[in-house]
Length: 112
Length: 114
Image 1 (cartoon, chains in turn cyan, brown):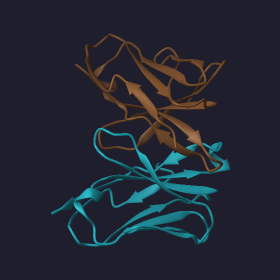
Image 2 (cartoon, helix red, strand yellow; image 1 turned 180 degrees about the vertical axis):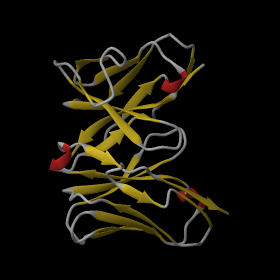
Image 3 (cartoon, each protein chain N blue to C red; image 1 turned 60 degrees about the vertical axis):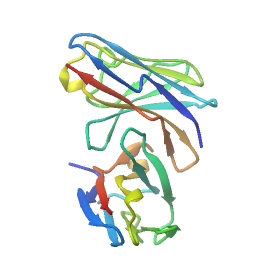
């Protein structure tokens, strides 16, 4: 059983479309992070959210942490081919010995 | 941020052989982490490497199969021993920065075992 459920697993969209990726858990996290990984590279940190209800924006990407700190979403506006990659959410909490727990990932493909 | 270099970046290995992956960080860090990532999938933590002590392995991973060295605060190695095709994977080194456990990763070492 995945501690962090990510959905969808795979998304193929046209350039210019919007999309949302979800990350859900039954556990409370002290912080949650989103990473993007491109082929042949390691994951790169996009953002960390710490406070329940927090919203952070990174250009066309909007990240939200749920009020109860059990879930998060990543919304991309007007997706570009450069957004293509594997998106991973990862949670940090005392329940897991303060180790990062990764979701299964969402493979995003943006077609031009 | 941190600059993390891994070598080799990729290798093709024969069944039964062993391969050592090196990880070099541009600054001193207390803990280094080794992850495995199977194709198109998420990351699984293999072990945490602390300088001056034995690595701490996660459930399902053992020292005989994945021996780790941590000779100083900027360097670590992971050996994949007696490889089988099931060990074909990307192996990633990472370090921890900040209070929220943010990780910085190397570019990964892609192993293919024939």
